[in-house]
Image 1: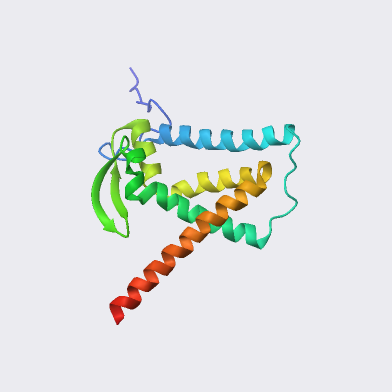
Image 2: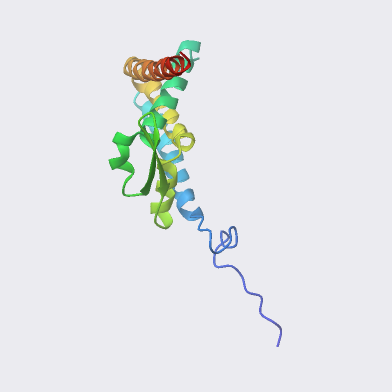
Length: 169
């Protein structure tokens, strides 16, 4: 009788060592949700008569970039937004400047969401996507919000510079 070759149950099996859970199916779900939401929002906007901008100004790109940076850090690291991350993360320690370090917890989708919520780099894609749709359907409101969060990011930089100057004097 020929030997039976054991096939993985899923093409994702074997990607990571058994003791290192990598919730690839949940990552795939989150990626699909992002992609479907982004494309769906742009299609819905188009069908509702909104036109895609022919171009973005340098000002809009800079404000959106700064606002994306700030909002992603507020969601991922701010101590006050910990309530939103708590179902998916475990508090590790305060890291200064009103930020905390948290670790994702759980398995499957809970773990994947925890990893997303503690990673400002990961959240930035979602936030930039939302701002991009906002520039199509509500550009004035989006510019107002990006200006606010950009000002917040610049204020943070000024606070850090001031604190550094105080320590040197």
